[in-house]
Length: 236
Image (cartoon, rainbow, N blue to C red; front, side, top):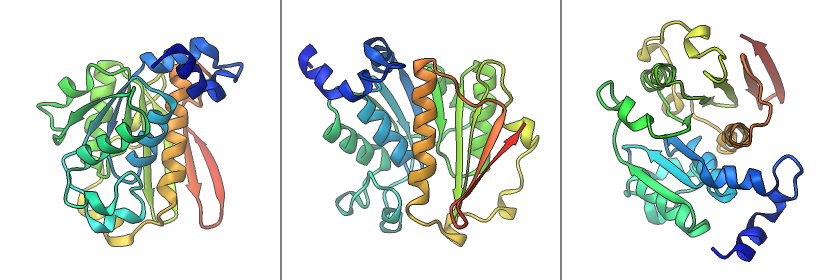
């Protein structure tokens, strides 16, 4: 992109005193991994790509299904049956051709997680199960990577920044994962379509602030209740 066009594209970010041209360069040089291209991953991918993050890794092993479309806004009816990663890449390329995307059509496992996470500056956990969440958390601790965490269900969500500048990690709140069969999920309880947009946008915002070196809330868990419109912050 020509310098004039680059400035025009990101001018509304550059005009912010805390961002400027130097901050936009930081965004351009950042490498972020998003694990999960579903409800939470959709707004994260959308806003990080639009902001001009230079390299996005997108990891998912699922395909787009019709019931995803109420909340997974980067996918369309035309991509039903297509892998979520390839659908996400199509979306990114449609809104910002300058963003490089690494396609990771794999399930994260004990044997491959470290290799997948290692090249990136920041990890954004948009997964939908506790096994993957704890695996990502533990690898981020080992690799000393900042982790943006989010979860959703029904009308409720959670957001936190883990393992950044000495802050606590997921196991500081819940030392061990619950049994998967004891945890209801979106398939059984559902999720209102706009909720992932709210939570995922907050996750993307935290990610950009870390890239820019701006203050972020550490050792806190934000609880979001959109039914009664209550936001609560728990100190960890």
